[in-house]
Length: 77
Image 1: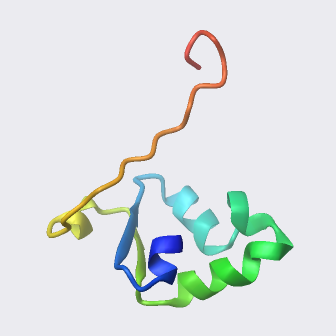
Image 2: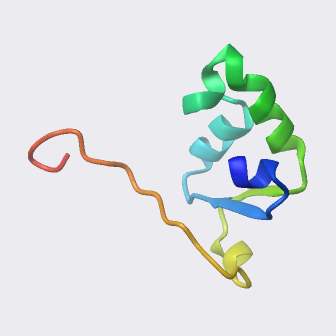
């Protein structure tokens, strides 16, 4: 979101549409905090951030960052 706030075109992709809805509704991580909800709302309403369930939006990007959940248990779960 910070990159999008600075005007970079950012694409968020996830095949889980529930997660995408949660992002749009500010029900994720940092956006839950009252302190950051205005920032998240501003970025989500800008044209710089595109949230999609289709990887097609990544077709012409120059750089991609892949974020995956970090296992919290010693067995990898």
